[in-house]
Amino acid sequence: MEKEIEIEDYDIEIIMLEQYKHLNIILENSYCSTCKKASTITNYKSYLNKLNDIILRGFCLNCGGPVNRYIETGENIQSAAVAEHIKNVLKISKNKKF
Image (cartoon, rainbow, N blue to C red):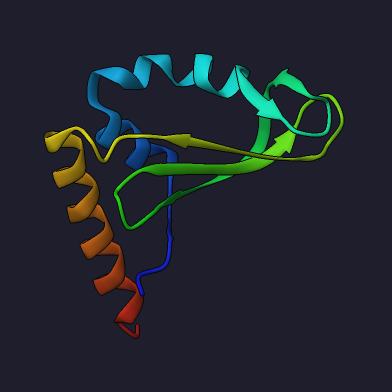
């Protein structure tokens, strides 16, 4: 079973293509299950899942509770191909010993 792989913000920019300009809107409109309303996700880490979707795992700006946000990039053929390439490169680089 393939697990999630951590990525950086510059990877998100490459994967999301033109949609990257909307990332701040996504970050500012993440649902907090503690507050029961939309909030801003902060101090997040980014991951790619097996479907090549981006997962943001962070914290609510208001209460500090955990917040997750999924960005469905795997449905876009071009974005999915870029995400798959990034995953493969990261897997190779993590297996190398320097």
